[in-house]
Image 1 (cartoon, one colour):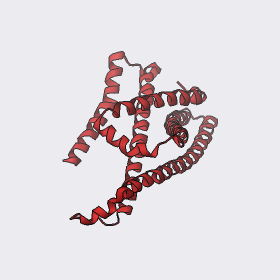
Image 2: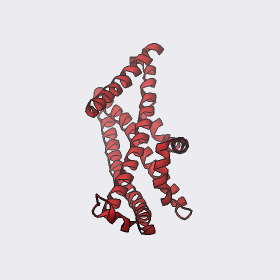
Image 3: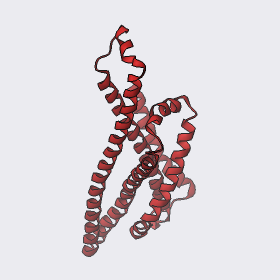
Image 4: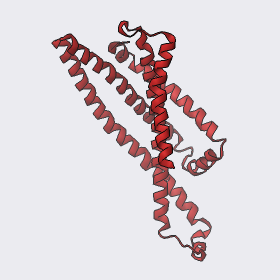
Length: 236
């Protein structure tokens, strides 16, 4: 595995990964829909989806998934480019060093553009969803004149319309953050696991099968175990 191979195969990798992400995402959504949590989530989100905007939602999700895949791909390419940069420093090859330095600078520029575009698209998606969801929730509150009945409640809430907007905003932002984080984490783990597993082919780092398994075990088990323990400690 070298940087030229990874760079040339980026387009095919993105298309292949996009297919599997969409497939796995659909299967997870179908599985979650059978649970009580999924049914509650679908009860809130489903009124915002109709035949008019379903195609737009699918296109927007595909674009957002592609932006996540690009982010993961940039991380992988960064690893290979930095490897070439530091290898050229060890070899004292000035031409090779400046080549990888320019290549890294170009990648950083592309990442900045990607970050801006990603932020813009995510905000557009959240705002459009917020408008639709807020409209549905306010309509539910106003139907059958429920606002009159609230006057007879002991604990009368203040500014219900504002609370609806805040709850809708928190629901949407949390959902987008969780989905993005899970997809990014899973893909990053898979990609760098493949890179670590392939290191045994390098002459200076030959590892037998059992040692490779032990190496990956140390790389992933201990960090995950520590994170779980820290989260558990913070919750308690």
